[in-house]
Length: 212
Image (cartoon, rainbow, N blue to C red; front, side, top):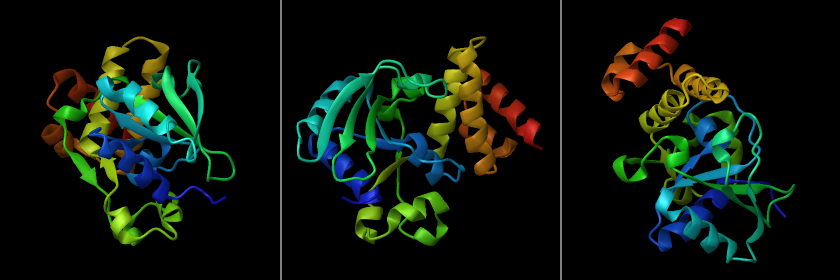
């Protein structure tokens, strides 16, 4: 048994890629990659909505690597977007650690319409939470992991905030957007360049002003 590291991320993505399924790292690990101070409780991969069920079955079929768990029908308060997410346990990791497969639609994104961002091979530039996951992992593997581009990640949370306007969950999506924007020191100039939707831009502008 070993602790979670980015080799496990690479392996899962490689299995999906071999089947022609695009995936990006989101969740706790994805947030930490972009500099957010967050404790890592599970590994989350985002795939196109049409591929989510197939992706889960592909991983769960690798019974020596993964143990199938029930879908996440009742996510915790801070992760409402995970309702219905597929889950499995990574057998080689101790203590027990889960891999969640969520759809891009659930995260307000469209993976077919965005570019994916390759990992930074220079671990010295990574957030401490991510550097801890790099021990014993080759630079070749690190540079092959596909992460969510910052602009797509931020726009996804903002889109969910727009879609759930006035609902209790809107506050959660605003919080996630704000954490990403704050960690990456996003300013109004960045927003004008990377956010092309009027409603999302309005929310982002409010968040920028709040942190000025």
